[in-house]
Image 1 (cartoon, helix red, strand yellow):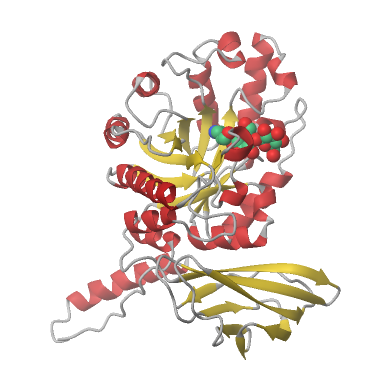
Image 2 (cartoon, protein in one colour):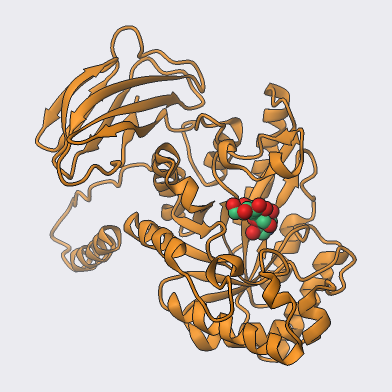
Length: 448
Ligand code: G2I
């Protein structure tokens, strides 16, 4: 909000000044260079996002990382059918609502995920006969999309409806409702929220191959029939060393059909353990994906499926594989992060450090917090972490940093023994404090 007001203001000032030829030199303050992927994405008019579940969001360091680095959140599980309509007509939007409210409070946009899928759909839906299933689908879409009307950037309306050979997946949807269920779902979603972008979303459609040909033909047909589809989500659950060479060309052909494209669930897994060579290869793969998207006007953003390896779905589904995300389990940026940083237009190497703040203990009137500082790609020789205590918290004792307080503003600086960090290295400092009404985790920034 503040940003766009400033932009409008600046345009107005610039326009006004254009007429004043007597003013020789006008000093317009230079915008500070972005220090996060979120800032870079904002400056470029695209997004960088992550998925988040309620559990992940409650992991304070994860949340502060996501708030700092991303301007788009995909709700990880809480908008799926098993969460929102566990029994017929009984809707529960509580968990999803809490994520929506939190993301909006952090100034992030949201992608809704997902309405019609063969997974995470309750048994009662799968057991319905044709007429009842059609009615249940319509009712589910109508109710859920209307609940979030005006609040979401986009919806993944239909998810993973294709087989690898490019034919429609023989799901219970397809078998009972026939091919037309996809068009019906998009129409129902548009009627319930005319403002949300409506996406078809799938995996293994990043390169040109039988499956993406199938999706391409579907989208072309839907467009010809006037079915309201606005976007194609390429999930991009990829494998180290196997980013398709045709990815950019594939994105372009979809854009040429008149839809936008997004990378919606990016991760690039590798055999564990992760070591330097694999991490460097993964960074090259992240570069390839990001350039394929950002090189095409109409590819609007990239979302990773979680942000840190701590919360990845990969190890539980592919035993022995993992390390698929841009931050490691301790929230330290990996070479893949630096690759994204450069692909989004970051210059001068990566920003120099990140800090994550966690409340590690809380009792009536008091709490203990720990802040972790992590260097970026280049070594650093000193750091400063800033935040504001908006709820009246006060520091009572501290360790491993020099604190300065100015009203609500807190500054913590490195000491002689913990300012120097190697590339990706980290250290922690902490404090105990007092609180009264509330003790939320503040947004922290780090400079080196
Ligand atoms: O499988 C990765 C993604 C592929 N594309 C669609 C996405 O929606 C999908 O996400 C994953 C979630 O990240 C997992 O968290 O979808 C899985 C289910 O298909 C999710 O896993 C499920 C577990 O299987 C359940 O046991 C668990 O109860 O998460 C549930 C909620 O934590």
